[in-house]
Image 1 (cartoon, rainbow, N blue to C red):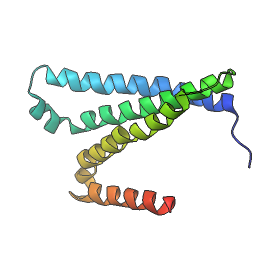
Image 2 (image 1 turned 180 degrees about the horizontal axis):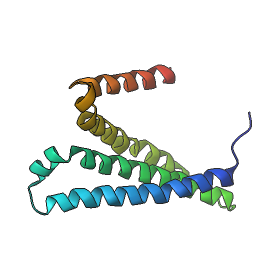
Image 3 (image 1 turned 135 degrees about the vertical axis):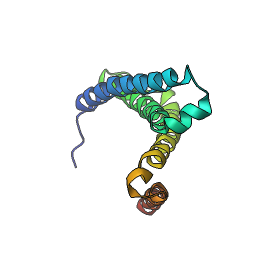
Image 4 (image 1 turned 120 degrees about the horizontal axis):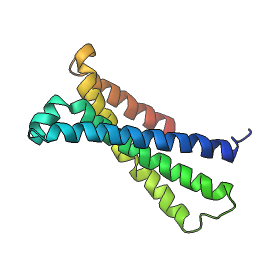
Length: 135
């Protein structure tokens, strides 16, 4: 099986890095703007989706930055060296805000159309899929 060319992966991840960064800034700015005039609890319950998007975009931004940086170093003849262990750990850690933000997003948005427990069943399905495919 052929591997995707490193420079292509670097370019695509570089594009996503900038886009996710802008998405993170815009979602966080919206949520912070809402906080200026009200309490966190009030804003959270009224703007759950923007809070969830901020968490999700943070995780996607961080993960994409790690992938882009490692690809950039390799494509330009540099070795990851000791950083390789940290990149692997960071990729695992960045899964936390991605999963958390995704579940929060589904909890805020899915019940509006599909019922109050729909987010739970999607999350359960994702967990089962992840475990099953890893076996």
